[in-house]
Image (cartoon, rainbow, N blue to C red):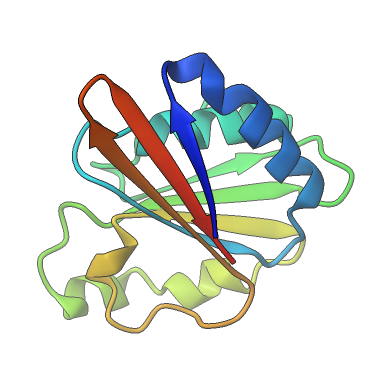
Length: 141
């Protein structure tokens, strides 16, 4: 487990650059934290570090967004947001396994704790918390 204290959004840049160098295709990032903690901001910076061809936005209403990347090994980011889903049936209807099995891709799932049966292999858990004027990012592999 690794913890980072974030005093501002720019503190995410070196973390995301390092992650982009270490991530392997097939990785599923389970991303959790309260509203406003910076989940989508983290994803946007990671997308930039992976050379996403399109700007990353919140998939709260579309539920899933797919972004092509110009990265040596990761060619696609699947970004999902489970916040608005209220049941496991809703989550299962997204057929998340289809995205998890995309070659040369990673998945980033916001509000992943809502998913009762997340994958158990190739997982990176990231938790963001708000503590006063700072945020804490915790990585667990």
